[in-house]
Image 1 (cartoon, helix red, strand yellow):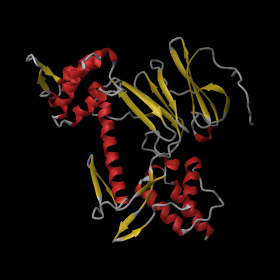
Image 2 (cartoon, rainbow, N blue to C red):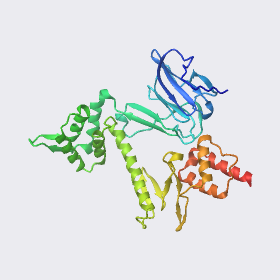
Image 3 (tube, rainbow, N blue to C red):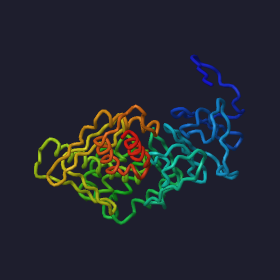
Length: 367
């Protein structure tokens, strides 16, 4: 049964409580309602993309029920992606349901989840400073970030900046007073009342110290986005630097500025990433920034997959949204070879093996 509404209409039969938030996915909507001190989630829409937390379509907002929502716990945040939903509780419990073909639920199981499951929160390097988690969803991705509590901000920042790599950052003022950089940073973070000379002096001292993390924290504090947790900023910056280095090298190779550079290797967290010569082509309209096609250099013979064929592009695109392959597409060995490189390179077969299996079965049936 289809119901088309073409003008603003009051939604009926909503439970009587305080509406805290409403979010929408592709074909589902979630509403958070507070009853006195207890919060509950309600959903409506099409369950086929698994974003409802239920086994059937609902045309009215009905409660999402699960034993994971305990009586002594409460929902503090939730967000919707294209076809998945994440929920955060006051006991730092992460709950989710929906499609997981890109690993957007953050579980080892690549299967889709129709009903709520608990998801393990990541183990972070600086757990002693962390008290608050926050969640956010993209169309096919999820992001968890954390922050220092405002009430303990001064104490926690002092602990952070008293780590040994910050202890020797100090300088003398014109009247001989010794200023420790971490306390100056703390003063600015809390009061934001340093004068320009103090800021410039602090920047000069820190820049001379070759302490990567302190530079990153300094940049964060004096940026317009000073509310970002400095620990989080440091880890994000590390990823950004890695991506920028990859992109810079790929562009240089692509523009033939360095013909002798055949390989680009980055070691990160005991894992080695190797990028063969020539380029990865970004198809942002398909994977929102993921590099899809690969040019592979084997025995000095370059097999160029830098441009996906139109057939392969359509296969990827349709598979993303439907997890299926269109019946009318004729599968060839060239298409299989092309897509297999992308799947293997990005380990997509670990998050969802269905695409390649479907290709092979369809190819065998057609022949």
